[in-house]
Image 1: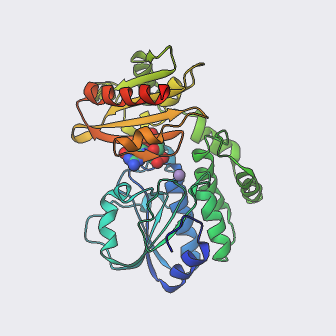
Image 2: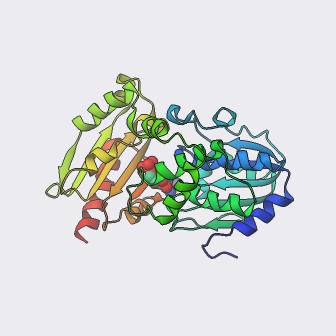
Length: 325
Ligand code: 5GP
Ligand code: MN
């Protein structure tokens, strides 16, 4: 079966048959992929499974509170064998990064994801492009697995749902989010404390990096497009990590009259990482896909070769054509 839909029963069947399970998150991990993985770790452990968590990337400091965050490993090529590999929130194989190698040592492969661009790359693909977060799908998956919510699982699911809905503000936010939230509140969810950690507190390097990003801000097409950039010098000068740039693009997008925004940052290995955003009804994922990237209609990304200015010119050109197209 290759059509895009939720398949919690098929995923549950694969899980029931497995004992050793590798749960994988995507590169440059965010709250949804790590919250979903952490929730599955707790649920699978309750079911008596041996669970290993993998991610080709460091857990951002802000997400270190997630139960099991300390157990997440970057695959070295020596892991396995596993009965099952479960990818959560991983929109395509490239986003598995080093976790791709786990496919070779896993008897079966499944995924749970909510990206509409997902090419259904596993044996069992529970993919719903209209779900606001993978963590929303994980809630349903736990029901099918007969695993009750706990306060710890609630923290994981809240993290995934709140971060992928922009703290319940994106157009994707729906009734399912709030009915799950009602269940999570019944598990003594420490909402105010987690909300501050996830959405209000900023590490000092992040605030300094914001200042550099705003210093680079440029508008095009009468302000309808906004761009920002961060060089290696900017990161070094602020003692900042890549994760500190993750939400800065929104400051450009939030300009009144701006329809699309770009943040380009110099990443390792001469690569340039783009964060692209659009306001409804504009979309930006097709621009990302034209350069080998992808993502959601209003939040997409690209990783491409530098140098920075040349890469920015190419993507800006495509954004201008899209705006006027
Ligand atoms: P961000 O700008 O926050 O890094 O990414 C926004 C969204 O774009 C992510 O949820 C992810 O789906 C997608 N994305 C980011 N970077 C890449 C990339 O390099 N390749 C692809 N295919 N998608 C990306
Ligand atoms: Mn997600």
